[in-house]
Image 1 (cartoon, one colour):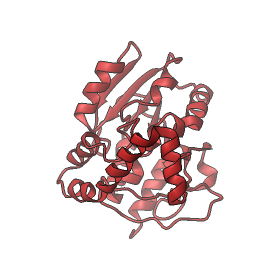
Image 2: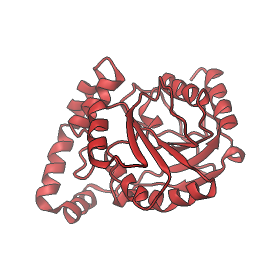
Image 3: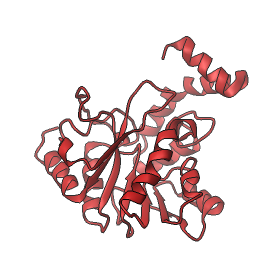
Image 4: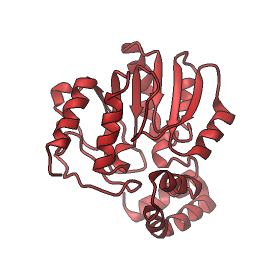
Length: 258
């Protein structure tokens, strides 16, 4: 999306004042990024991201990927998947500010547990959204332990983590009782392979789970659907994996030199 189209899109969506606020906010993103990545602990980095609205979204502190508009397809596909695999307990980590998931859960009777490393966010979510089948817990996905659940949704998360923290996340998942992992890949099996790179946790890059060092096989993917943002040209998909596949994914990472 070109610069003029981006500006036009923001004006049409947020109005002139909203678009100006967004442009000003983005002008400080690089400076904030350096401050955030300079913090010692991942919890401090993600807390700073949340409190400073680092992703500059006017709708969700979790970023543009969590807006109502940009979650149209996952809001359509997720309930079908949960029904198909008879999911009774859904663990959503990181749950973010629950901006789009509240629409999925509005008509659902399944038990939902949202987990996030940001304590203030969890406190806010519990105050605003907790119900008989909806709860939120403070949870560091790289340390665990995970609560009992049938499926873990880990959307827009791994591409913010270093390789070591991705490995830790996979280890935590494998040591849990959760059977399924639904997570984000920046490429599909038939896509041109991307070159993955390591980062500092809290930063961001595209992450192709079908390329090294992860090497997920297309034959091991139970479900796949597109989860691209309307406001971004970058494509991404949600893929459903079982524990044996996650174990192979971890083994590939352990055998890799990155």
